Length: 195
Ligand SMILES: [Zn+2]
Image (cartoon, rainbow, N blue to C red; front, side, top):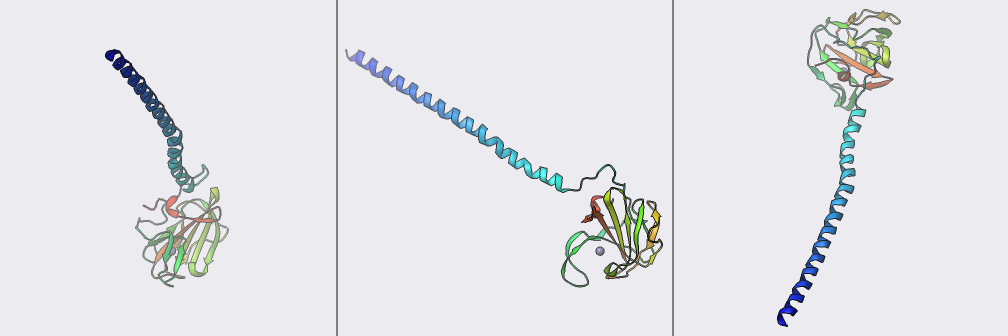
C-alpha cells in the first residue's frame, strides 16, 4: 500500500516536472522569437547612419570633370574648408575653400576645362577668377597678383590663368581655391586631388 502511494506521488511529481519543462520550453520559444523579432529592426537602425553618411558625401556624376592640382607643386593645405577663426577679422567665419601657401608669381592652373565667368577684382577675394565647368561645377581662385585670362574666355585644364599673390583679404601670398557644385560651396578636397 505504502509503495503504491509513493509510486502515485512520484508519478504526480513527474507530471508536474513535465509541466515545468513545458513552460520553460514555451518561455524559451517566446524569448527566442522576441529576440528575432525585435533584434533585427535595431540592427537595421544601426546600419542607417552609414547609409546617410554615404548619401551626404558628394557623389560625382559621370559628367564631372577630372580635376587637376591648381599649382606646379603640391603643398599642404594651410587652412581647410569649414568654420574657422578668420586670420584677419578674428571672427568665427565660414571658410569657403582651401588655402595653399605659395610664393608670389607662382602660376595658377585651371583645374579643368571650362568657361571664365569672371576675372577681375572680387572684394575680399582680391584679384579673382571664376570658371564654370561641366557637371555644375565652378572653381574660384583668389588673391592673385596678376590675372592672365579674360571673362568669357574658354580655358583648358592646366592653362595658366593667374599668378599667386596676396591681394584682397589676405595675410600672405597664397592661392585660395573654392569649389561650387550647383551653386553650393563644397570642400574642394572632395573633387580636387589636394593630398
Ligand atoms: Zn582662403
